Length: 594
Ligand SMILES: [Fe+2]
Image (cartoon, rainbow, N blue to C red; front, side, top):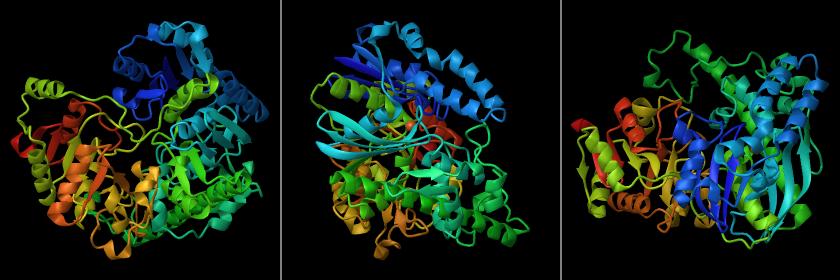
């Protein structure tokens, strides 16, 4: 039985193909269209999934959409009418887009895919989130927490999963949304909403949570962990372009200008920023103020999530928790939930945001709606498109790109280790691209994590990003506890997907300066031989050569672009940056030969 899951028209469009309950392929549309967070109908991702399954759309048994368009339309209609006339603009724009696209999802699916309406099903947004975590997890029984910006009406749920059943027992509703609260601060701090949330999280350790009391003026948490926002401070319920209002700015001061460079006393002024500005001390103080605000919203977000998880733990008495929704990508909060909520284990799958809804919806149809036993557990994130050696070779030859083919894996790995030890920056392109926003060793840029200069080198050569954004470490799973304070590290699934930020052991700050954040933490990825043998082999060899089985891993993309998909995308990154070499499967391209 083949089920195609689709999510689109909101955040990240994606498609997945499930065959007899097993995942065959999953991809976000942005990888194909090269448009970051592309939310349009995912025709490329769908085609990729169908090709991976060797089927055409007429062969599909079901197509399932990750949410209910009419219910969502109902929310927009109701909230815009409530806040009329301020909301007239948002109402008009919503009407146009909803009438054109979203209300007619079933007809669109029918026309795009040639699938009759009776084969098209609709899940609910948060049910899709819940299913995307629980039905991928290794747990027979677990509590479920979903938290995001907003689905149809819902912004968060509590629930339980048992076998193939999911019960959502409580829901929080728009406009009371933790995702939208965090997004308001993302916008206030000068970042793009739905994109810059990671930057707020990265900026937070540079600040002190001095404004926690002010943030608590905006939000109140109830005894059952649910919360409500004071809407007098926000605009997102009646505006398409503003999330907060003048009262909000009255509490926190002028919003940060999006073009303002971020630096404080502790970041210093990186060389790649250019000339040091004349009013450097004043700008440092101003940035410190914004870092303090980031620290404050991050702290309150953690407290709210820990409060919800604690309540859920008490209420259900269960030992395991599955988390989904965009807020589930807040890896600092996830670690606090693990430490403080009472749950012993967490499961979060790598596409915890809306892209993952496509997967949850498909699993919900197979396991819950059709009542079939669970046949799948997500052990890794490698579900995207792969390129065969002949495809890579054809690309290199056709474009006259000098390269060498190193067929012996040991020799290839030795060569790459040598480059890393020389301080080179390596583009590492292997197998199927990752599902979700993190590069996990198949579309990664790698460097030596031991080199104190490496953060600046990678930033200056390729990323050009703000100095507060940390680079992540990939570590052999069985060596993780030597460097990181995460007991039973290899046992925890979120660590496979870089979804925990944990303390680096203080005696290893000096061993791993390039991946240790300013507050002494690291967003580790545990690497397993079974799941990624070549990446594991590389880190193992690097460990044999240096005594440290850890590499710096950052996503394979230029600033502002989605992570690379094809060999051509990868080569384009090599050409447009100062990356030193590119490994495409067993092919090696060295910048010096170009
Ligand atoms: Fe969502």
